Image (tube, rainbow, N blue to C red; front, side, top):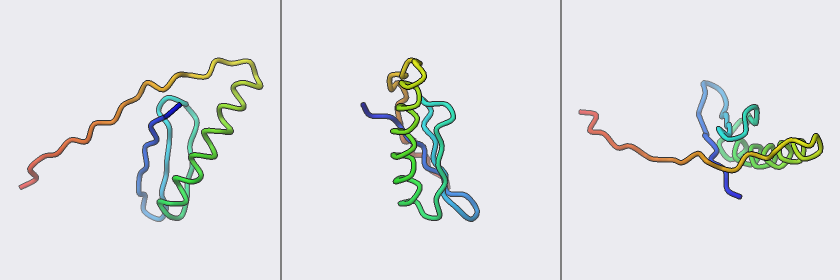
Length: 71
């Protein structure tokens, strides 16, 4: 499965969350660390859902990059 992870730069760190897995978040000091941590968080989140007998949501989010003329 492939989930969309939103990666955002904050004032002093990078954050990541997965829209299809509410509560699945990660924070890192760098973008690379945030990406690595969100991958781990997705695995742990899905494992936890399975252990508790809950349904694992199918990926449904999509990404569309929008370009604008910011003149």
